[in-house]
Image (tube, rainbow, N blue to C red; front, side, top):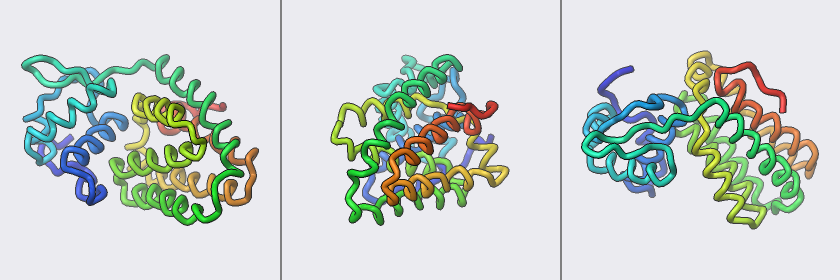
Amino acid sequence: MSTSRSLPGLQALPKHETRREQIREALRAAIISGELNPGTVYSAPTLGARFGVSPTPVREAMLDLVKEGLVVAQPNKGFRITEVSEEDLDNLAAVRLLIEPPTVRDITTLIPEADFPTLRSLAQDIVDAAERGDLVRYIEADHVFHLTLLGYSGNRYLVDVVAGLRSQTRLLGLTPLVQSGRLGTSAAEHHELMNFIEARDPVGAELLMRRHIGHVRGLWARRAEEQP
């Protein structure tokens, strides 16, 4: 991997975000996708040089990620990327299966029709990022879409829990999907989910969500596809 290049997708992130927030989201995506290796210690200056930004916002962003458990501060060295075992990833997916599909089922009839265009736009953001091969934007757009949907439950604790589970997930198969051009097919599932929601089909939405989370431990994780 190149040691000197611009942080992927950094300029494509929303304009209202601060530099620190942009870098934090990009680093989070790099961790989730495996671009930053689990167990490896990275210094802020090294990451700054690698991604073409100054060390200070990188250090600040990494301190934010320490709070999320994605990295561990190493005094006088930098930040170690947290390692997550296969068993941990299986358990994370299992908890998500307990929470997200039934929640999506329950909110399918609650989402106002007036909100459909906005949700469609968020789903399209995921597809657009996949077509560009921009994993930073893909992971961020996916995060926004799903947490926005779950927000219709009216349960902020549920949304916070799922956000934490998603941050701990590792999707090491995304880069090969980008290289093969198959990420767009997976991204299109978000429009398929919207089809069920717009049709007020809670059973279809729930089943789609189960299949979607199955990809987390299958197609998107470089493993045989899981059958939830």
